[in-house]
Length: 261
Image (cartoon, rainbow, N blue to C red; front, side):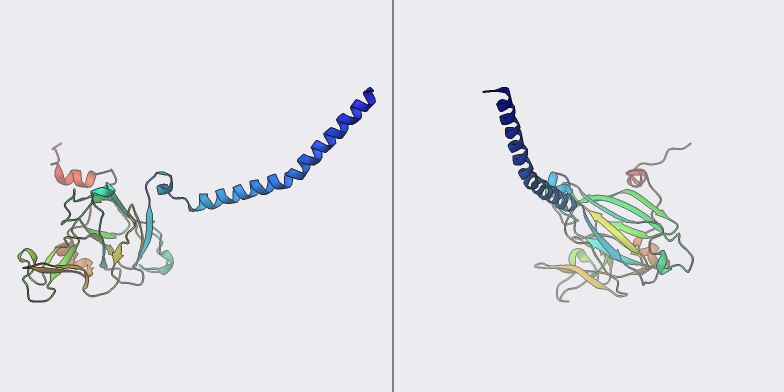
């Protein structure tokens, strides 16, 4: 076989290989496009819980178009020990809702809030029931009051036949045994980020609303909540929360006595 023949065959083989590769490029491109599309879909939908992380659930609390001199009830039921520690953060950027002019036209420094809480269970829970304020920051105007493991509420009867739980009187301010909560200022909107799927509830009504009840053999209880004017809030919801941006400083200040200079 002459050298020319060998070269010719090599060239033919190369051409065939090139043709084969060329014919596969379309298929390769299609597979790459499919894989990229699948990855993009996954990237846009994946959450921390899908990759062995911790889930984060967000929802909005809309109290716009309500009086800004009033605190409205917001409540939730925290999971127990099986979920470990529950995290709840209520927040808003300082200029949010500026377009609605809740405090007057031209005012853009509305109210900032970063209320970070950690907890587990509720007052009737057999688990490690607690709710601690990790951080609390309120800028420009007060927005949150009355953080409590047992949601601050009003005791009401269910049937009117049985006595109320724990000797409570109808209309007495108490704490809801199955719900935690806080009161937020009206006229504004808020974001809640939490580590559990169940929703955080709230009321926009200017009247009492029930949030839960229980009736046992010799007692009953219905927990009701209502809004409170800022002028009346101290007696029911407690004093304004102090600014505590350092983690756990709020509870530490309440636990440990301050030393003298």
